[in-house]
Length: 368
Ligand SMILES: *Cc1c(COP(=O)(O)O)cnc(C)c1O
Image 1: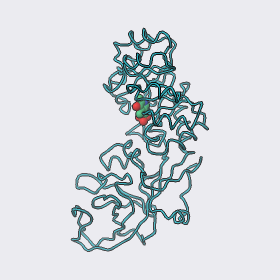
Image 2 (image 1 turned 135 degrees about the vertical axis):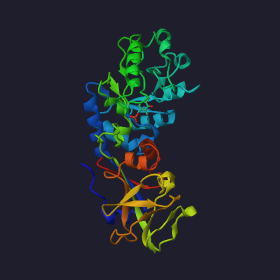
Image 3 (image 1 turned 60 degrees about the horizontal axis):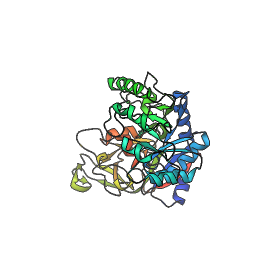
Image 4 (image 1 turned 45 degrees about the horizontal axis):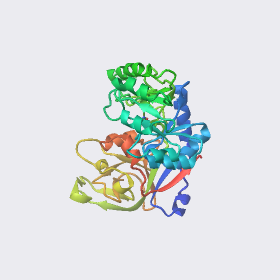
């Protein structure tokens, strides 16, 4: 179940002014939902970038307890942190093999996702590894035409996994999806018997179900919507709340915040909230003329952000919001206002919102 709101007394006991709550039971629910949707493929978990900002160790522990066996990180140091959590987990490093990194990966029994013939050569027979083919992203991975050469190099140890990555699985009608699926099928013929993997979060929901042997969700695990434009099948895992530090009344004509980017057109009541861009609230969530304002929940009702988000503070217009006062808590992200909504209002993507959250906030893990 989703955690009930933290009692205000508990939050005050923390003497904190902002709080990121991560609901590990909802995380596990999301993982199970993705595993079901992708079955019979095995469902892994992508926990790079500190589990999209939510905390590698607690996230990994919760998913291990739920039966997740395979994890993807980006870097060797993330891999070492993941290895410290579990001796048994299969851990792939998406960066592959940085020059000279083989001994380090080997020491922690990490599996590189080999991205080139040079990396295959350097890894030689140092242990299990994945092969990553680039079927259209033009970012990392072997070219499809290198499949034969890669297979020759890998004759001693068959790849533990052969994978590729979708360019725009979040747009199910994009013809690139089918082209990438076809390209991958041709590549896979060079590696008979090796497990295949194509799907990130959105890929899992493609109508053609290209789940193969292993799926690799990240964003959707943490509550992001893998099916933009359609209701989110996932539930929010992160809740971000902050304290009202002060309130004030200003007259029509007065401005709010740096550079006076917002001016009151009527007598206005403001709440100054202890959350800013140093906590992960993007400056782009500032009010602007070109789009609807980002909002926060104040006593269950939405109130707009006004003026410029500063490093430590943001102002809300709480005129007509009843008795908002110093010491009240407001919710910036949660079940109601999700990461995808804030991302649109802040002209970014939910992935960036998540990975930048809570550098300074108090953190609380519930449901673990
Ligand atoms: C980040 C990443 C994923 C996870 O993608 P989501 O869209 O967050 O589900 C999967 N595979 C690769 C190669 C990645 O880099």
